[in-house]
Length: 423
Ligand code: FEO
Image: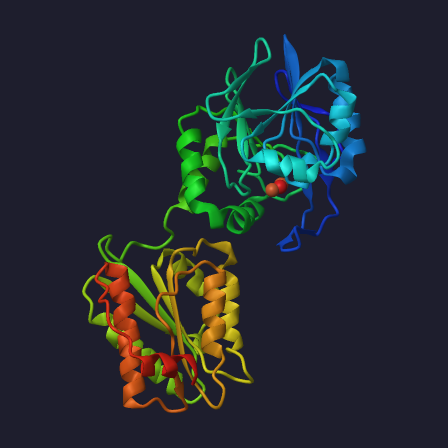
């Protein structure tokens, strides 16, 4: 592999001036980076001004300024654009603004608060931009596209209109360091592109779809992301891949008019399994809901994440063991970090021996994930009685009614309240 390159011209008038971080092995704690990463920054020269698009992580500022000085003087810089303020892209900003004090900084509306939080004690002037706003560099024009929540609220993209070159920030990026820089020259990075999407963009699928509405009509000639290879070979294929990834992953068997309710359970002696069957039976009495149940004894979390992403309601059944829900339940719940779950319906139920904390703990976790938990869960001491199974059937029925907008408002007696809050 080549040594670290000098500044590299990626299109007429535009240079890559970023930094390479080949030894990084974890990003943001949770992302594995077997190939390290790059912090991509770009310099765009027009006949009336020079723009710097994004900077680099603070630890790599020397490398960044060395490359920047190969292609421009600081007094030529008229424009600095930050598409995203996470420190891996804003780390060199204060020093850049100190060296080019005449330059105007352009950020998105939602970046204002973050800028103040990240660049403390320095009074920076900035301009707020949104879709439709432009900056004139003479023979080149920067167009801004508001693409929030990819993957922070502040994110935006910037386009050179005359050349259809998109500076996409984290979008279409990946953690893959290869000094050959271009997608048609680096090693095979497909796994990294998919991994990055799955962990960074997937939870914001709806915002990805909004951004694609803006990006897809552009006849892109090159995508210059903030991490990983520069996409000059078939750039639009990466846009198409995002469209595929952001579309429902499963065959659409649950009709558009049907809601999907999933029951996940695990059972030590068959008691929580009996309760799960009752929840399913109750849920099935309401037309328009497709009800499915899965025994976590036989399956890990990964097969279920796609199902959960497209489901409307999840009910979790767990016994209480040593004052806690059991590990397969927590594993499944922690796997949901990569998808959007807020506003789904959630519920919990389970059998217990002497304390029964699992139900409240699961409900608390569901609320923490922003599920709606409209119905108090059902607990049964050891073998559920017929009355407790009836309450499970009622739980399932009520969940389905909530999904279909047929909620029956019922009067809850004081004895029922006391029973459900302290068993
Ligand atoms: Fe590459 Fe979200 O920072």
